[in-house]
Image (cartoon, helix red, strand yellow):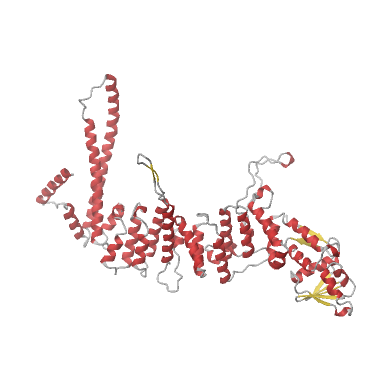
Length: 617
């Protein structure tokens, strides 16, 4: 519950007429206080009996007529609203101290020197005591801190700002459920199965919990200056970097419209305190805010979401943030590039001379930071005396980035303005061992070749060297063998490695078959006892059963491989121009096309050649 304190006991006798306040006590006013555009027609005695400043100013008019006693207080903290409350306090009129007015009243009371020398229980003592109550509540501490902006200079001199920040930081850093502070997200609803025992103790198992982000929304309404000081305070108290990063992300999404990509964020982006309206900050203010947030982000790797960092980088380019700010973001993103999504990596080109649709140079720098970070993190594997490898750096981040880069290359490849050196440099940055399959890089190269038909043969050759034909899947090999955009040498390589893979597989299965036949031969040099013979007989029976099933699987696999090779050959025969590729390949590896019905010579020659090939194998 919000703190509130009532002062005074008299009913209200102040009335406002336009820009004038009048105290209706029945006595004629003898002093006029001007504060800004407002005029207060009051009486001398209630004022000078409570304020040292007003006593001195009124005393300067003691030798003159009362009608000319006009005092100007344009510099009073809080302006006319604050002086209205001060005047009511001097007259003993009822007023309420709240977290929203206590800071302004405390500064105004100090400005007017309303100390205990001018009456017991004066305004300074009353507001100071109430502040101590405010600091006991999280909500009231935040409200009081927000009002410090109105009287920042005086609040700083009276150490009110630092006290508010320390109070809020202490509560944000502690477990809120320990002290019963009001926390957003805490569930206070009782379960229907909960039973209440004596003395208010419940027997239900559902406990009241609070998430770590309960304070994000409240502090996001603070100005950048106060929010920054609060973050530094919670950091010095040992708050986890994840919580600090979460608060910074929430604050940035509220005050930087460029980060708002979904309607759900728009609903909360510019929501201010109750009864207030918050407009979008200017571009210069957004640039300053973004740079400050980047500097406040925790340095620990992986604490801040990569998606958020990429959003900040995109916004920094739009707002023309400083080069150091953008470099900082690129370095942070590079350190955790394996956590990025392809959609967020497609950063529009914001340069003055826009050549390509996306900012490829930026992604290249991010990738360079990642590779540098990986080279620094990787350590040489540990080797034991027997020469066995017991530890090696994980390839998971590198393989994830390789997949990400291949997808990015496929997205930018259709851009006709994308120069060959940029595409080649980005693709070559990923080492060969990072890709378990090269289907992704092959797809990107194929799209680039299709969008850039003017490339020279030399450039096509260089581009195709970026992929490893031995690491293409069967589907990719089938596509590559029919791809007219690929150089002839690459098509031959694809067919060669696929045939080599097929021959190796078949040879492996025949090796198993030979071992299976040898297992059936009796061992005449070994004499066994009756017990050993019976044990061996049982073992051989199990072995034969497993070998029969294994041999059947082997024959089935060989048939599948032969069928795949036949299908690939038929697909190539259907083509026009690539038919010459098959002629070259058949001459190189000794393949013969199937004979046509009625051509006995060709069929006989083919059969003899098949027998010869089988013997050679």
